[in-house]
Length: 481
Image (tube, rainbow, N blue to C red; front, side, top):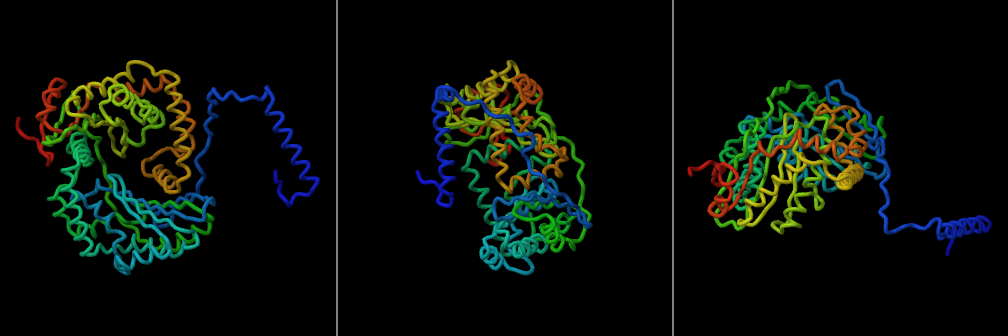
């Protein structure tokens, strides 16, 4: 064995002696390891989420700074508290996000792309119903150049006519292609059925895309991209005082505005069981979604709902997968998820099956959903799902972008300040009785909708034995019997 050369001869002998003692002790029967027994997991850390500094600039921009020197990088994430809920025309917020980095008043699209590439910076934006996010990440040594490009996209997005026309064409083409993608048709019909006339249920159509104008994008940007409607998270190898000075230099002169505020009712309920069948002639399999209203993002039960969902359909160990795939061989996969938003949300369980077993698969999906309410799960099953969720959460803390998002979620959704500091310990404390209680509170087998995309001629007779069937065409419009 080669000990480090820089150690003195005496220290090398001492190190070798300690190593030899360790080997002897741990080779004795008293220290033998039972490799047939799975080691018990350690307790969840009481406070795994990093500390962060918060400051609000005079113009209303709220800034969160998280120092993390593990890598020489920095991530900026700006959140505009206005998403597609504020669309005057469906799709406006999505177009704004898509075009933010496609040219500014100072740089055309090609110049902007060239300058970001030259320093290895990625600037991306995305729209959701509740917000628009604009993120930038790069090496800390390029912070000044990064902020120059980043702020140019945020402040001076030009939405060039040629780029706007290009995105319009691409979106129309994508909508046409969606008719050949059953999963996307199922997702759109699910939103329409779950949310009804609520803005969360809006979806793009060719007519909606063609109705959007460049002026709509400029107007949305003028109204909503203002500092008193935004938060900025900074995560990375920075010193809080230094980066705050840079943020003030770049964002300090951003002019305040008067963005609209929304008061919105919760999405509608789904009384009874209805089946919504989108006829797709020629399909040899069906896409199934069992959906019902779910809790809003600010509910206090999120840690427990993660364990509940993992038990039902969170992965290979979930009951849906074990039933539909392992027991019956009807599908390649089955899963479930809660989608929690600011004003409400949804729960859905999904799978894809052959036409001939579509109805039996739905019956089994409903059975597994009901079983969670009817009987407590075994301790070992819930322990496995607790460990899985706590481990996933702790691993996710390695992501700077994910950390930035969570800090901003506390502000956006009105979560308790210690929501993520206690997240792991709250998940680790969930019991089988807790899971059963949550299932009774949030899941139902009597008030829900079932979405099916497939060959109506093959699957409709079986579906009618489960509930009332409403038929749709591929434009998501109901059709006569």
